[in-house]
Length: 302
Image (cartoon, rainbow, N blue to C red; front, side, top):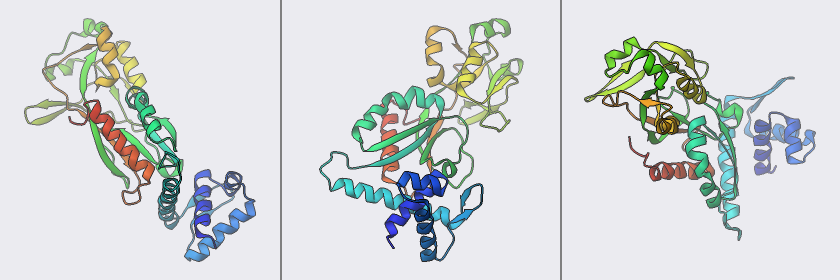
């Protein structure tokens, strides 16, 4: 039995979602794919996949084996590339999910430098502000902002985004300009909530050595950054968000910064991936490149 080939077949079945799709991807006959998985399970003396008429799913043992197979296959690809005369020492695919604003305004404009440095890595990018399941969606790593929910994922901080409190001139003309935290009780906010969770995020302010949390009455609640900024521009209420998202509107006067003597703590930027000890080389260099990018942009420290 060719164990390495069987591992490639198993990974393809998991990532394509079916024996038929894996067979097409690998240019094999479907019975050969099924036989390869059966022999692998016999060799390991355990079931890797739950099979049904509608879908496949990994067993807990299969999920652990999948991550190890991915790391091994990535290392094999890197080893093969290092012995060739090609300039790229890393090869393979890397699928990353980014927050919309951070992806569009910070990472993607600089991403050509990463591609030129590692031309053997084929990038697939998703941009979303909603939580995703890395395993079921075949994503290698995700970048997220702020506090993270408890999970089995490994989280590594890579930098911080400065935060501001602001509103449109039209809103401030109607409701006045808040100067103190206590003034916020008379105001309305465009509040942000994450994914399908209806609980809006608290506002944070630095007060001496402490962080004060505040809830501001919602004029509207949104769960994506484009809608968040658009609602502020439309005059729904105050917003508290990353300066990265609103700086062009602050520069143009479409939004006005308020409460500058009440600073907002910077928002942590993190990258998440399944296992530290099994991190594929492509993920490892992408994390290192992101850290370097944040440093170059002056965003490595709060």
